[in-house]
Image (tube, rainbow over the protein chains, first blue to last red):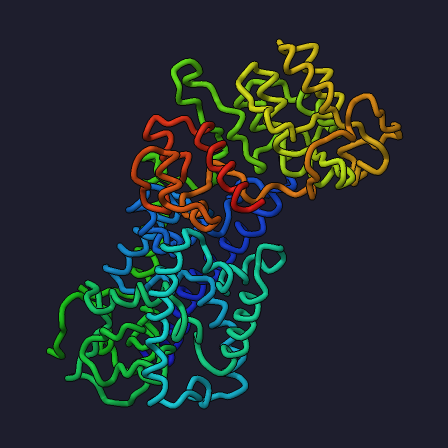
Length: 283
Length: 265
């Protein structure tokens, strides 16, 4: 295969992940709109009209304590949220936070905004936060996770909705969205022009929850040092600023399994940065 | 074993939609709020739906299905005129259609639907608080189709809300405006405590939890004095607790609402 066809092959395959992201974004957006249309008897046929809470796996996470203690879900959370929580957890144990990198519409939305930022700032994009500060800021999302779960458990109410930019994004036309959530969504949009996936990196409690699976996931992103030419292209490609070139296996809690660093997309040497179960060698 | 992006894509989609399908087949994919009213737990009425558990989000179509009341009777009782909306019309929307002067304390809303359904089906209903009203059309239907006691007839005679142009807020096609003079003989103006026209935020509903009671100022000891046992996890819904412990939800609801009234006048 020539160099040109290799590059062409990589470009085509990048559209696969983008297509999956667009599919889920449109699906969630359609369901959200249909939820409100259904209230006026004008629902689009063949498309679900459930609330956003019913298809959000994080609802299962925050309601878990109440479910264990009381045997029921907190307000607005349905059994479907639990099912999705289990499905997402299963996929995360297998592939890491693939939900973040391939499915989450808010992540997709931030990436789309980020494309504008890339055009504006080119190579400076996603490098504005000093590394020394950034590595500590990345753990704020775990504080958010603990707070959200604690507050939900003690209040027995879905208070996170009041600050959730995901809910705001898909319900901004309704009176259910709080001003704070809209402001946070606005801030996320603006920051996405400078930083790739700012909500995911610093504040997303669900990303924090799934990110833990990076420590023990079955299929990891692995780099084969024997074949690596140390060009650092994988580091530059990573939206989460992970230093892939420094590790044999990516167990960083921020990995979203986007595969941008792999030989399939960015790494110029074939089968050097791959997704596999076992550690590979260059032999 | 190595994976490429195509494998990741396929696995992700299969796991998500396959998991949803499997859970659906097993009966665990419930994504909508339960629209079924609760059933009575006592043996005399066991199996029948309790009108007291009708929620504002229930549509007239839901109520017609569950309580086997003709949709046309429900629509006529609350003066809906557009047949296309009868089935999807929600109980809570009644309060946006009908408003009465604040000093009258009258409101036509979910409570009215509960009362109408209970009387229509001959099921127990609590009219001791005297704060639920029906439209004349609803009363006429009940008189012709339901078996009303003397107590019920007397109650309805003094709790019929007459419409005037001012009472009907919306001319959106679902309700016809009428110019009817307020009749003093119905006792419309001799209502009890002034109401704001808004639903009581301290009413005990099917979703009210013990945590709500604690937030409203009732102590744990107070709660235990009503339920006659240790208070469970505060996030437990009172209705669920009553059902699982063979307690009469109606009775403990009244007891708790009385307690709340003493704390929050």
